[in-house]
Amino acid sequence: MSSRSWPAVFAAAASLCLSASAQIEDSGLQMVDPWGMGFLEAGEPALPASMWRASSTETLLPMMRAVRTQGLTPGERTLMRRMALSPATAPQGDQSPALLAERARILFELGEARPAASLMARLEISPPGLDSDEIATDLNLALGNEAMACAENTSALREGAYWAKLRAVCAALRDNTAGAELAIEMASSQGVNDSWLTSAVFAASGDLPNPPKAKYDSGIALAISSKAGLAPPDTALSPTRPDLAAAMVARPGLPAATRAEAAAIAAEAGLIDVSSWRQVLDTLFAEPEFEPRSKVEIAIATAHNVAMPNDGRADAIADALQDAAINPARFAAVSAVLAPELASLSLTNETAKHALLFARASIAANDPEGMVLWTLVPRLDEAPQTDAFDFAYIHALGVLSGSGDAAQIGETLVAEATSKNDRQGAARLFALWTMTGITPPPSARALMASDSEAPGKATKPGAVLAILANAEAGAAGEAILASVALIDGDPSKRDVADLALVGRALNAIGAKDAASALALEATAYWKAAK
Image 1 (spheres, rainbow, N blue to C red):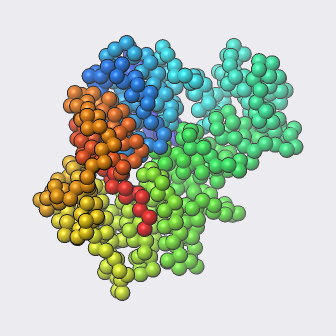
Image 2: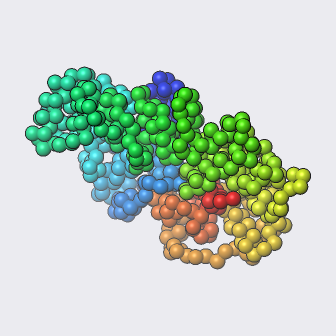
């Protein structure tokens, strides 16, 4: 079961609508080989079961150990999730147990904690520092499912620092102060000393006049912080455990402001729908003494201030969007969560200064009508001075999102591309169209031939051709690992010829949706500062 579904256990209580329930796919291989365990959501496309068959474990192991799992773009994340969650037959070679451990580690670091724990329970070798029982128990604590976490896991037979701490926390959760104190003493005698946890346990019993600030870096810390009613910490939540952030969104008893902060992290990581983030924000705004702090909260509050003029509301939304232009994932999440506020704005001479930024945000939020609206600046009475190429380029970006007539829009962009920079920018965009199977019109193809950017060639040509060869050989998993390594978190920095070959490879393995996402990200549309 994918982690996008496990917060739904508590969704009714928290009034959240998380992703559709996931299921472990019955690949017919599960009973004999952990490679056959699949954890995709219902209806989510899988890679071919043969995705490892043409690869060797000796080649794959260093690739899996080196692949990034943090700071992924939405396109990269789609590829990594699909690779790690899909059931498959085992690759060739003697390193299969080590590779399975890497698959489990990748799942965990992607925020797919429950699938990671399920897989680890079947492995000969566990990833270093990870234990399936600890992950499953800690996840239940994070979600607020404390009875289940404590019912079977507090036996003195379990050894280790985690279980020693758990016995103290579970006693405190049951209001068994004496039992909690005894468990702390036993943990200390075993060399397990955690001054913050000791203070938090005593605070839960009401015996500590100056309780510590809450911690949210584990399920244990979440559970005892909530039980003791500890005040949120002054520092921001860490984005390194998006699975915990997703659990916090639906966890009862946490302050709404903390849940909203966690929801921003989880939405950026793709672990919850943006609608869930928005619902937490709406809950936060309903609190009588709430004061907005983040750029997103300020934008929402300003947009709903009836006394604020249209340009002031636009400025606040633009400020939040510019603050999110750090990476494609954040820009897309913030654009989507602010979509209602953006839709409430009118195009005027005062708001036109943000038109290009708002058009790009509309693309990120999958709002083609909003995108079109913000390209109508030249039609305003006494319209501010604009560049026709900029708006033609916006429409060409929309083509990558499935909006508009590619032939007509392509011809218009070519006609408006009069400067050298404009022609090179248009040529790159047309080349990125080909990543998704969109055919540029004849004049656009001629522009690609005459004005394409000179390659920087930070990547060896053979490395890119190897990705295509992987795909053609049926080695889909290997193609994904190599593609994510090449893209390195920002496809806009890669040569367009390399990206076109990567797009061909991804289309060949049935990942056209990821190729489309990467093509849009490679335009750097999310870096817009206007």
